[in-house]
Length: 232
Image 1 (spheres, rainbow, N blue to C red):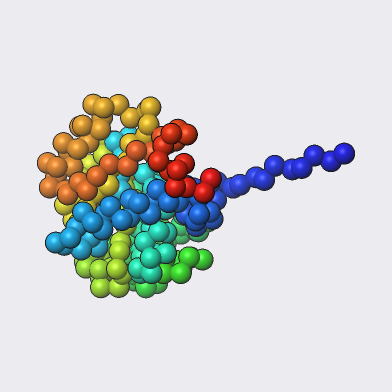
Image 2: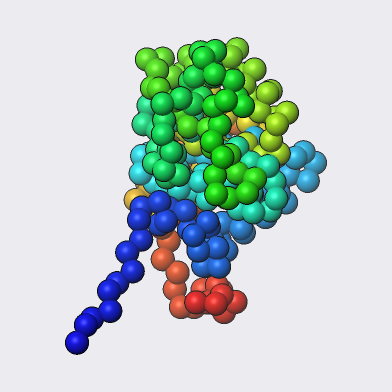
């Protein structure tokens, strides 16, 4: 007798649940976050959104990628930009090469149109980090970055930035006041309260508009509301 083989999912499929399993409970949660963001900005459209976390490996890149997908599924023209110029991961998530990207634009080696990658998801384009530079913070605070932002706003409805952790380096603080909103991702059972509070303090001091916090890796209980309305 043959045993049925277990279905094996790649890392990309696990990370991009909104693309590979749009009807799952997790995908529904990302759509809820999208709705909350849109309702939080009735007086000003959120066009540029930054996603960060207090520390590493807390789910910010996964959150940024899935938020980009759900905005694109809403027929918004979306650009996801990997601004983690120290440890970029967006190209792994979308199985892209990273020989050129944001740093290629900032160093005038490529134009925005030449550097973006199209994806299987309609309306979603990806800008990988490009070659890792020796001076990430200076690049993100440069006039070239400001010009890139203006150019991107002219081409896309929503621009999401995957940034380094707030407490690790200053890059996230540099970008915070350039974006219309900031999402802070915390990891259930891992992120310390003091770390979350310190991150909020730093983002606020940098004049970033903190829209809210995403609690990542929280296990749903059978009594949670989703099990009442969900299909799994």
